[in-house]
Amino acid sequence: MGSILQGRERRKLRIRKRISGDTERPRLSVFRSAKHIYAQVIDDTTGKTLAFASTLSKDLKGTLEGKKKSDEAKAVGALIATLCKGQKIEKVVFDRNGYIYHGRVKALADAARAAGLKF
Image 1 (cartoon, rainbow, N blue to C red):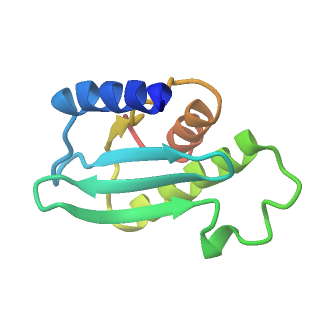
Image 2: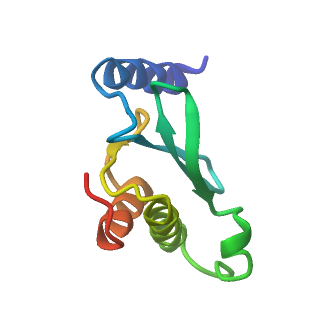
């Protein structure tokens, strides 16, 4: 019962032991559901979310119709990078949140890098 979720949760905890975001390099965390993908930039010292984007964001409404999920992830990656640039955030620590660095997670990360985020 829920062995996949338990596995991801274990991987997530193992990753979070080593990865932490601060004011200089906040953490870019990715969450992937069956339909959508979410990204948020978090300052772990204060516990505040600095920027967030998802396939449900108002900036992307209507532009994702008929696209593949990996293309939607690329759009979210580019959007989170532009939001970070607007807040003078250039460097982040990437937190894949227990997911394998493949498919939509990799597409989001590559698009964020291409848009100017460094990690």
